[in-house]
Length: 533
Image (cartoon, rainbow, N blue to C red):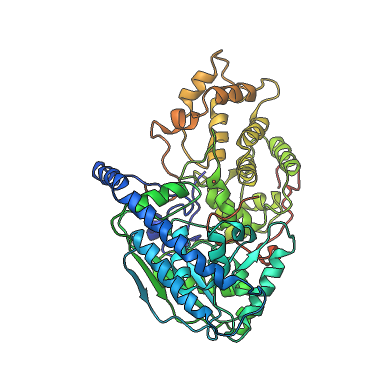
């Protein structure tokens, strides 16, 4: 399995050679420290860290009574006229700024001119990479979209309620629609309500690119002001991704930095055209492109849903350089996951087995999965055409589709692979077949499986069964690192990473209605039991 040819349909909109050098998996963040850096962190941990934690707690507790008094008796669905509460607003801004200062954010540079609520009722912020992205929220006291459960958190919940957030309830199936309606109501109030800050990516990334924007912020069709964030420290202790340091480790490492630099830039207000007002996805795409240009950062069609692959744990935890993230993007855009189920995958596996290794050209491949030939389908085809022969084995496609559909059931995908490759008369799979199954499952190329196969095939039959493989995984859960990657034989087949129902790891929840997500739907069930002519 390999990365597709970028000349046809780039996932990242820039020159292919530049993209290969710069692009990283946006849902993975790896920190590596030199010996000197480790010594510095150790010293800061026993000296500066306790002092900063004490001050941060002090400032937050000091802010609580101000927020509590200001929220007593205040209605949630109406905005009160300007009153004494603006004094509380100023006090809280000062207190929260002191809290961030005590945490090492000594100077926060602000560029550009913030728009008035009447000019841009919605602020779109990106990239979203950490809970430290709350800094611009506390500096402006703008409203945000948050999970309803947040308001019940002691101290923090009171501070949250002061900024009049729009709450999304997990228990209410109609909550997303209500949230969009509430945002529309506030956005069309002529500036009476505070501005709403929204992180349209819907989840945290490592800031290597801008992923797909959710359309929720753009459904009201009102002018928005894009705001870009830049963390300028040489060592990135800020990013909080699905695979990487956890929330507490990020807090520890960041507070151990002597100074943390943040730049907030307000871009000119973006007024949507009539076409963009009627098409929130187009509106979101154009705003994202504008923000990416300001950041000098590539954009990619990877989305919040794709981050599930980065959450996989256990024996079949995917390597950082897996091509399955790109395959998942293409599968989502082509509508291949719509209507997919375990039963459909088993049916596809049975049909692929009957082809028994017959190679398919692009037209046959398209007919087999019931899709027209397009540039995007060509990209997917290229991923399995490793040798550039113009032919692929449909079984590899079924394995990859199974893995991206059910990433937390890797052994079920392996079992499906064994079923498609094992010979009925002999039983089990050969070393070559095992290599193909594992390459397609992990999204890698040129895996060296001989050492592992020798251990598995203790009877020297030249074949192993799925039961034998399953028992081996139970005995050696780290087999991927120990047997497949440790020798360095598996070279990255996708752009290299230098150096887990899913909910967002950002502090602002996604609220975009499901029917507003842009997708193509197709019937993807293979249409014949034999090779298509």
